[in-house]
Amino acid sequence: MSWLEESAWQSLGGSFSTESIAIPSSLIAQKRVLITGAGGSIGSALAHAVAAHNPEQILLLEASEQALYQIDRKLTTSHTPILASVGDPTALQDTFENHRPHIVFHAAAFKHVPLMELHPFAALENNAVATFALTQTAVRYRAEQVVLVSTDKAVDPASMMGASKRIAELTALALQSPATKIKAVRLGNVWASQGSVVPLFQEQIARRQPVTVTHPDATRYFITIGQAAALLLFALSNEFPGAILVPELARPIRVEEIARIFIQRSGSESQIVYTGLRPGEKLHEQLLSPGEAFLAEAVAPLRAIHSATISAAQAREAVEELQYAIQRRNLSRLLRTVVRLIPTYEPSETLLAEQAAEPLMEGRNA
Image 1 (tube, rainbow, N blue to C red):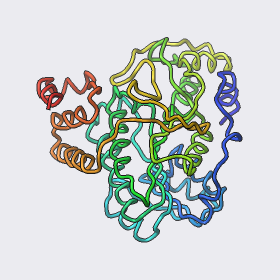
Image 2 (image 1 turned 120 degrees about the vertical axis):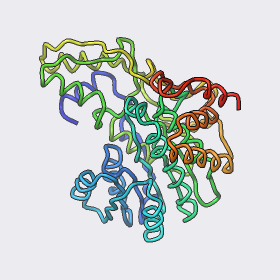
Image 3 (image 1 turned 180 degrees about the vertical axis):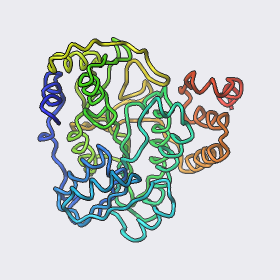
């Protein structure tokens, strides 16, 4: 982080320090570790964090050539760059057949809420269907652990991005096996990551433009990239069951408060302009839904939760239905499947403008 980002983070109260997280080095040492989305903010931080624990090999799977080039150039530990999409079944097969990873960190995902409202098929294909295929392959090759990077937007999702990540949670966790432990870690917004409000605010201030905030009361949970990587490694601990894991984060932060701090500390005269919540955006995010609860056992700074589950057979059927709808670009069928899996999900006006509500209501009662 830059000094300004660090200073702003500290003034907002930040959350826990990474020094307080005891990383289980013995679970990583001399292991082959696959990281998907390895060139992204979290993926690259994970790669460096894993490298510090003496792995046998790090497999860097990334769909972006430029992002893969950057992490390949910077990482000095033994590693193998793999230019491929998680959604490519042949690439997945080759990766597991040739390298037999012991641990899989799945960080690859489409993350931008407004964009995914415009591209629901891509959201479900990349975030849900591909996650299921990756997990299925990992189980088939008897990987020891799969850790899915999830998000607070998967909690009672209001967006297609959030819904796709909740379906990823449901279908991946359904594949638990005696040989492969599957976990999902829900993170908040990653401070100063690519596409977050922090670089956006700094860019707007540098250009002397108004600083755009959706709503004066909008709040978000934030976590630093280093904390995110440390938590994901900590999730490997044998103390955690195959489940959804939620970090103990500090208070949610008002986005307007962040904007004001950056304006003040930059010595800028920029004004804040409220743009309104975009399709799929919530005023406040949560880490648990009303139907979820923490397990009695607490292992700070992560806690496992009780959450709704589906069977492996139901997961396969749901993924097949999604694939059918995606291949045929059938939005009605896609939404019916999503609603069936997540009864609380309400499609945004953007999606309903493309698809009449009547078929969706039929699917809700199916």
